[in-house]
Image 1 (cartoon, helix red, strand yellow):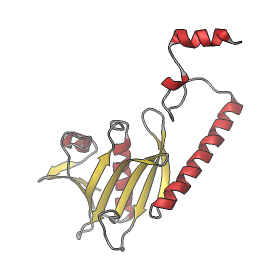
Image 2 (cartoon, helix red, strand yellow; image 1 turned 60 degrees about the vertical axis):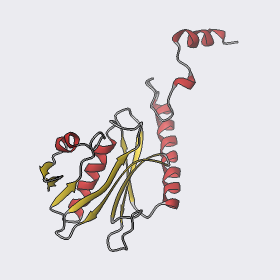
Image 3 (cartoon, rainbow, N blue to C red; image 1 turned 90 degrees about the vertical axis):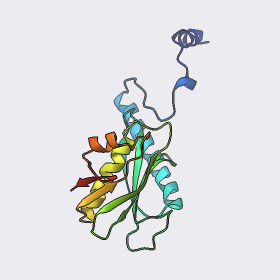
Image 4 (cartoon, rainbow, N blue to C red; image 1 turned 45 degrees about the horizontal axis):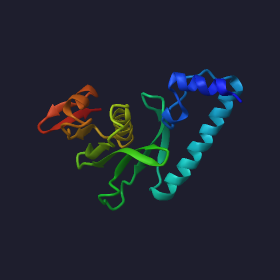
Length: 182
């Protein structure tokens, strides 16, 4: 039964296994299907947030869409005024796909009131999807909230966080670091 569907799938070469999880489909949805899909997506995001809350420090989150249409969570944890440790610096911004951390940026507030990037990374396989740009935008938002006048970043060559990327995001070279005035 329904052999004609199987032949069509074989001929087109597209199977369910070929679709990457989390990547939106290209087919047109009816209004009911779109509403049901949106409600299901909201439930998934709420459950993932609950899981992240269990293992991370308190923080605020926002959802953004990468260049391929995946919905990713950007979590900002402000730990200013608390004891600084390598795992929990004063400013931590994390990108999650579900409950998997796929990128992060850690920063501290310098004596002059500026923010200095300590560490930044996007996991391999997730580069060039707009995650690094979203992390930098969120760092700028945090800098405005903290009334910082500048953001200092150290470029990492042969990486997504190289000088060309940071210059494209509005940073200017000052010594060994790149600086963005706010």
